[in-house]
Length: 479
Image (cartoon, rainbow, N blue to C red; front, side):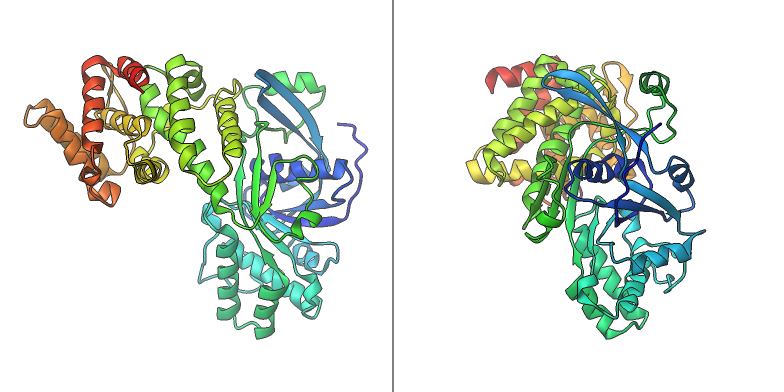
């Protein structure tokens, strides 16, 4: 890889060497640099025993990002060399070098993706202990060294933007950092500096990153004409919604670079739209498509009936109850359908079906309840999906068994209900009543919602009598 790499000040400290950040935040910073908008490079910290710090340094921080998916209705593949990484540090072998970064006048941002399990408080973690397990403990130590190095100068605070997939991730990290500062008996002035000089941003990230393309590596490297141990593959779509102050748009001008980065006062509408539309559509269609004999997300959206089902679900039932501008939501939903049809990503429906009942509750039930509350009627596609999941939890597709994966009590509950029905101890409507009444599943008795029990029972009756394909067609015909 013969690239004349342009040097930039090290403005970003990144916790995590993984594929996601390299195909997401690092790619964005590279995009801004190439447009002369950011002028900053990234130091990546490997904070676990396993990572790619050595390989990153062997390749001088350079690697190829391959974006492949659907653009303007066509399958596209785009190759680019990301040049935004200056170097990588292994915190276990280069701890002093890591702490030396705290003295850097150029440093301005910290980003992280240490997985959801990384944002925890561990009472055994100690100040200046390089073996600390939790990311917040490592961060607290780093910030304390910076506080001391600059004598509490409020102009030397940092902007912390976590990418971990937990709600209010920035607030959570700040809370834990302050807790460590307290139990470690650090200066009161340090705690004030944390609050006044540093900006902890909640953020929401969205891009599918399959990672290293094992199945395509020979084909890709033949096209590139060089070997690259750090190739990372992602989809073209990306969203980074950051809850932060207005001035952050000037310091992190990603939107100006044409990137889908939203710096907003309130992150919740973006989180809500992602969970309800993207994740909600995934969950709602999985049982329907799988019981039609379809195995992957792409196959599902290419099926005419499933595509119509998704259109009704997203555009007629979910979008009308959300809080962002309708035009923006419609555009996002169209993009979701493009992403589902990505020929380079093989996303199996059975993998989405894991713990499906809790997913339906988190992603779809709230939409169903909000629709009833707003329009005083039952949303047909959402309630049909609930019927499909009840059928799915019978554990059979055609004549073959489905390997259901959920909490043991959930599986046992559905097994008992379907055994009673097939043993003729109760009819199908009674089965639905029992499922909707299970407050351990739903935190309420869904039978209390007028007409919902009838809708779900009627749909389930058609599914069981005629099969899922006929049931979907009947839903669409009468929708």
